[in-house]
Picture 1 (cartoon, rainbow, N blue to C red):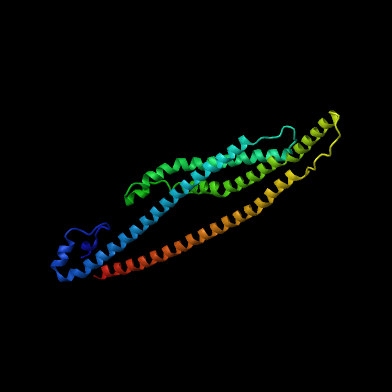
Picture 2 (picture 1 turned 30 degrees about the vertical axis):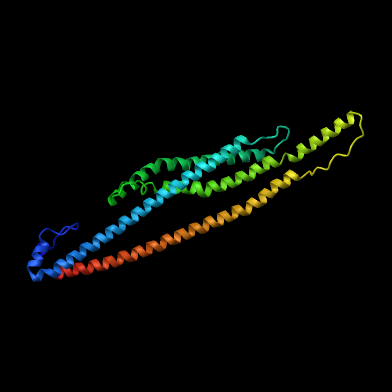
Length: 272
């Protein structure tokens, strides 16, 4: 009787159902064996479904990272190329150094995220297009999980923060020389009028702090935006971690229930 119970896990032995139908004492044992195999197969399918969900999530993250990185790095390069510095204005050296460093780090971070997405995404796409449950093991998303998360973090969290800082620095570079250039134009106009022999006219009042105020206003607006972005990112990350933890607890409970059921069926097989 023990030799008949040693059946492979994948499928029942041929002829078992015929022998069970032939003798009435084998019906219960065949039913227990089939129930055992159904539980194992359902557990296998649930594991496969979890693997496919991870595959699709990794593919979505890689696509979002590639699009965001390409867009923001392109904007940063255009801003650096198209910015026009006033040659007659002496910029603070700290401002120019900060703008140069921020632009370089921003482009480097987004290009690194774009590189990871470009290298891993084709392999994930190739596996996701195959309609076979067992092909999920051929995808490198499990082994490259840390690189995918790194690209996702660089593209969304660090990259967007650097882009906000880039906007603030660009506003200071563009608006700060406005005061000095306006004063120089008014002085030149008054000098030309006096040398021509006409009566000196009163120069129009030019605000000496208009450019500085514009740059300060952009900074005041952008600082709360950055704080809100950081708070949202932390809250989203904590909510995501909490959701994953809850899902893991549910999966552990389901596996425990399956184990209890399998132990009960094994005891039934031993008693038979």
